[in-house]
Image 1 (tube, each protein chain N blue to C red):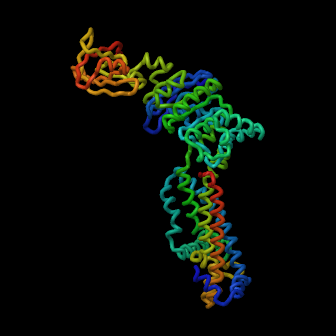
Image 2: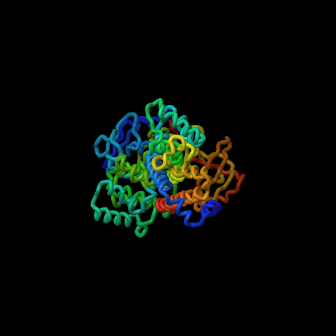
Image 3: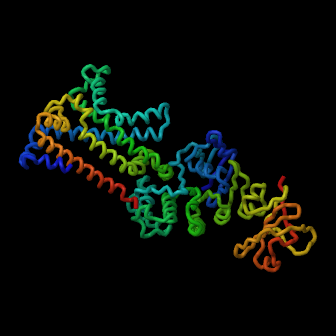
Length: 237
Length: 317
């Protein structure tokens, strides 16, 4: 990382600033952050629901679903990207064309980050003391209130961990995004792909500069979420 | 508020947890459901609370059929063995939970919480989290939380089971005092016969999903209805079909009318009492309970020959 920072200032501080503040770089970063944020929020909600269903419900094929959750981890991301393009590209067999759009990027990021929240929330749900829910019920709390006031607060730290990992992964993801995004500057170009482009055109210090910025954002996010997590677990003496 | 249980049955798969259980609990009484693990006592309590639904039979609270009512509508306070504390809430918030659910005014909640904190002697700990409390304190918080909503009946599932012996004894006495002050109809589940005898007016002794006997603590001990009651409540020697309590056996150094020869195997000194383990001439093993003075007078030694006679024995058919 130190090498990266050193490399990024090869041509002086003003070049560093220029590399990260030029309009194409800013547009790519904006797109990356917005799509990642949306994806992570969706993950927080649906990842929790998936974890809930896997822990609390019984259905046929549950073991299979549980195993498939990890697929995005096991699959090379470029294969995932190709699969997504085949499924949701111009010749989509299901009639959904997301290629070269922000939705395509979102779909790719959702796919690769799905396991994070599921896998952080699942063990907490397994361990969750059902006595607490029964106590709340006997005290007159209806099911929605039990979820909101008794279950959710216990899950929040795990959800936050999953969110932090999803976000860090999403802003750096390249393999699954590069094909379906189409890499249109100012439209569907994300930072990771933009960095690749800079390297290919010989602008290594520029690539390093943008990388440093992504790194800084990643760090800040992890620290911020870590602090939030500590706040939500302050009761664990 | 009274509780009536009529012919309740409950199975978990092949396991019969309850079978044909009928029971009445009077308003203001303190009843103990006593039995070994797997006897169905906790299942019965959970059926009364609505945390389990019986397969057959019905349950009435204050004369109203609540068999199919959810726990929210039963007006019961439930105290769990492992506290079931809301660990992300402070002590005060835990206690206030039921009142907040009922949307009571803020001042009223605050007032009631303070009252309860005092009742369970947790003043000054209102802002702590459950993880910062001892087991005994957590269970008192659990009680305060259950009592906050003025439940019609208070149900306790092995409430002191997870606590050490000294704290358990303290809380037991405290629960009895609390009940004498509040007169809330209370049912407590326990596997500890001493606990049941100490706190309860009425003991329901359960075994294998059925009720063996219902009665006062003394009834069960003095007039056991079955072999199971005889051996579960207090100690008993069994010789063939005959049962005799260790303290209903007397020892003498020379034969008397009706006595039989036996050899002392072991002497166990338990403070005030001495337990003498004997083998009778016919091979039967007996345990005899003597006071220390009685044992000293006999000057008992292991391998000594003594004569044992029963002042009272029972045969169950």
